[in-house]
Image (tube, rainbow, N blue to C red; front, top):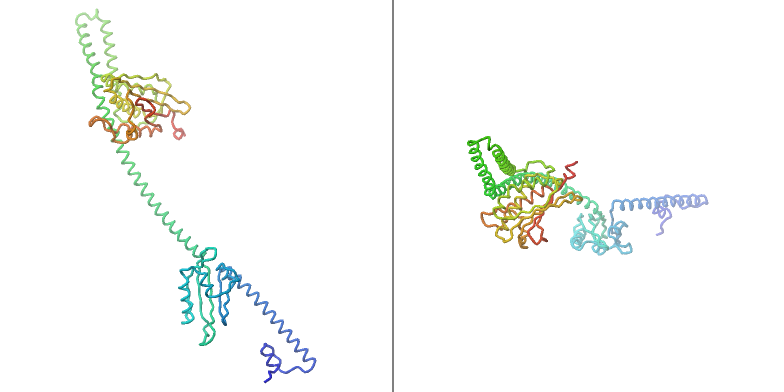
Length: 450
């Protein structure tokens, strides 16, 4: 049966009831065709424009689409872009699965099978592994056409959304949250540590003060015998002179006046000598840790120190040699603490050389104006510290002396005191004899001048 022209036109969406007969009717018919053709062109242009917009939206939102209709599979440009593969690769399930991370392929393949068998749409998170090795995190959604009937072709649609940036943003947020939490915890921990450090420092300072006092008392104990001898001798002389003066005055005061005056001068000198020793002991015993730093004449400092130990050296027949010290040489220090250090070094040297055939201790001073430093060297006639002990002599409680003759605190405390003076105390390992070098500033440090 022939199909009428009207039916054919109706299929094309054109309305014309009867076959044109006259020229005018044919002209009207052609005008209708042209109008319809123009509408079709406009529709195609509109479709192309909307397709471009869709592609742009897909690119911006990083959403790729795929579909299957009548055994034809189609992928959008953005899906190719997400997969990082060339558009020449034909779209297929194998190609799709091949673009996934190996650990995700079986799971997604089962989802495709269930999609067809059970008509159940699914949404899964997948990892795409591009040919360059870049791993992308995506969300995938697929569904069948709800109008599918048994025996019909499979029709399904799906989208793949690249969520890598969102994942990275989430990871960054989590990292920031963790960092912020750690920062708060670290702040709290630092506060707790600061408090702990302050408490421990206070305890340490108290312990150091006790140790310094113990070392000082030990030094005083060692000096006691010599100091007693140093005081007893002039006291005995004073006693004898007083007895002589009394006898001379009884016999003839006028005749022996000059001699009495001379003996009185001797007594006065002896009293001053005793007073200086007592004053030195009192100064040494009071501590000095709370004293202010000051520029102090080094010559006076060493002379005051020697008054406290000279008797012991004389008793042990140890020769003491002190090099000439300029009166202008000053050190920036707490004098009492430096006296304690010098006494400790001299006492150690005295103990070390007492049994030697050659017994001497030398004190020398060298001023380094360029460095604003003064070097004080205490050297004895010993042959030096054995190499295996050199790293231990500054450790607390380490001593080579017999039990009861040393606390092992002297050098350790001395090194700490010198460090607080921003100076140094070290053993000179290049000297053929035992030699310790003290370095002290001659001026106040810059921060204290500010």
